[in-house]
Image 1 (cartoon, helix red, strand yellow):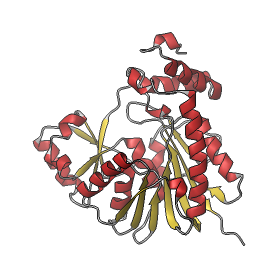
Image 2 (cartoon, one colour):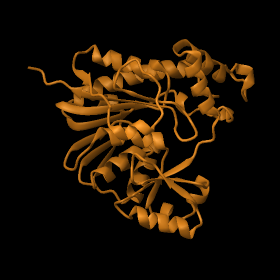
Image 3 (cartoon, one colour):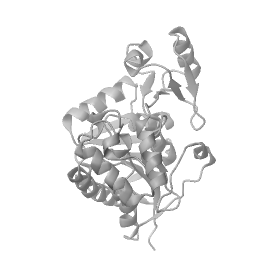
Image 4 (cartoon, helix red, strand yellow):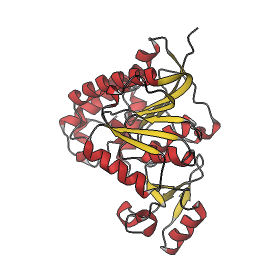
Length: 311
């Protein structure tokens, strides 16, 4: 079992993280999470098939003498053996042929099962990884509304959408909690603002220096308001995905339990065989995914919900 004085930094943020983990998990699960946080994460990219094929990107990587590997659950992803900064110098990055994105953060958009012609809402969209993936998955033929409350982050979102050559995304600079009730959507992605506990790296004190109980409490308050708004904006009979890059039940299972009590939604179990290759931890709610941090994945929670049709 790892003690606070065994990790770099020995900060209050790290001590709080270890305390929170031991509140919720047994020693074995805590060790899985903390050992995963010691790992250096791989660099991964997603091919923008609106502009280039995967084979074309592989050829470009070969020309640059960059090694790469496939993943089993999505054809258009590559793990690359180089630094992000070196990829950013290549034409494939500058022209939007690829998007640098962590493996975990791609999964919520894939699970959402978006289709062309649907109306789609991304409630916390910047910097745009999930928004642009949704556009690619729907061949840029869905009507996507991307919400971002912070103007500077919204500009980054717009930049990434434009560089990817995507035409059918409307960006709104607005707090998603304040969206007008006359909006209604076929699919909603709520990758909620969170404490970021799943992204912490024990060898990088910067990643846990911000981690406080105040941040957790503020995140939970925002998450509850956002998921309630999402359910209000979702068409009856349709589905949404809730996700966070946190491993804490406060921000994950508890949020889903709170919205289930409303009686308006039910959990759609995430049971596709293609996710079986991804390591997971037990959750309080059957059918949801909790991915522990590791060399390949950030810690991530994902739940799929369906809005009931009231009779």
